[in-house]
Length: 125
Image (cartoon, rainbow, N blue to C red; front, side, top):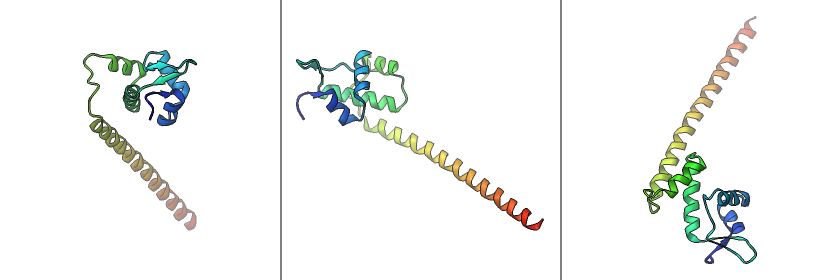
């Protein structure tokens, strides 16, 4: 990887749109480290680390304003280990997905029971 990446490169790596990265620049959430002679945004490895945190907090459903305040805070440890946080997100999603799966199975069973009752009563009529 080169010292800097273009906005298109970052978009391809992260899956974020170029427009999203431009918006993050506009609201001062993620400023590029430099601009090319042609005016293209250039991002450093540090920018990518910050973007990883932004994406993580977005996954946790933090509003962009809160993410900006959090990352600009003097008390925020930018070197915090991300693995425990990611593990927490996965566990939370797993629990939520388990609850959704249980609800779907319950609805399916209720519909099946309802259909069996209808079949039973329609046969005996």
